[in-house]
View (tube, helix red, strand yellow):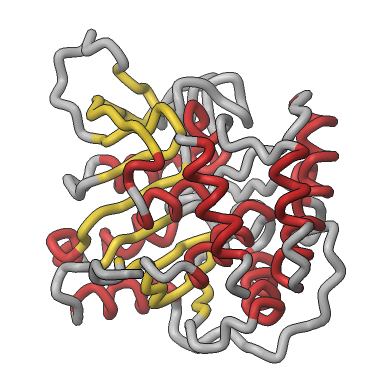
Length: 312
């Protein structure tokens, strides 16, 4: 039985296969009060990521949570997408009808600013795509910084998956990431070191398929497609559900082990743009600024997701 107050979150995303599963976990778990879904260009162009978010809401019956469209371009650099991994639609695999639900008219950045300013400082931002919307909100209204309870980011790591140095979400808009990481707001980072442990193996996929409801069937189709592209491009036998880790942490922080470390964002290097420099051993002597997730409790994580999918 849920006895603690629900954790209020805004999920900022770019659906995306793993983003879609993160939406289902956030909207369906009793510990979370999902007060808004904001979209950004990342895995696909903005119009596609927004449509995908609406489709996820439609199939799962999520009709009471607003979806707001955000930025279509990074702060400075040219837009880059991940069609090789997520398909041209950004969420290839499942065939879903066009949604009845529509995005709200308010811009995502305006929604984030307004919602934070009207809050009691009890809202967590959960960006699981490029950090453009979050950085833009911080620049436009610095007063929101004291209103953010925590930012739980999916991105970064001690190695890259888009370049040898950089993880995709950070690489796509490292200038935005630099704004966010230097904001002074409490940050927890679900980087590749952690998310590559969240592998949807055959046993997990079988358990999800056995649930038998439309939401779980949708997740099974997502994972089938994701497995194919991760095997082809990265050699992974099982696909990692990166973005789900950030939501799982908001539900139960003990699902991961973390360490407070210094993390800086590289924005000037010719070969290292988008790198998150994680000072694992304190060699810089700089003050730690990010709660870095390093180890996942597999059993707790998958049980959490599967039990939530069963509620749909």
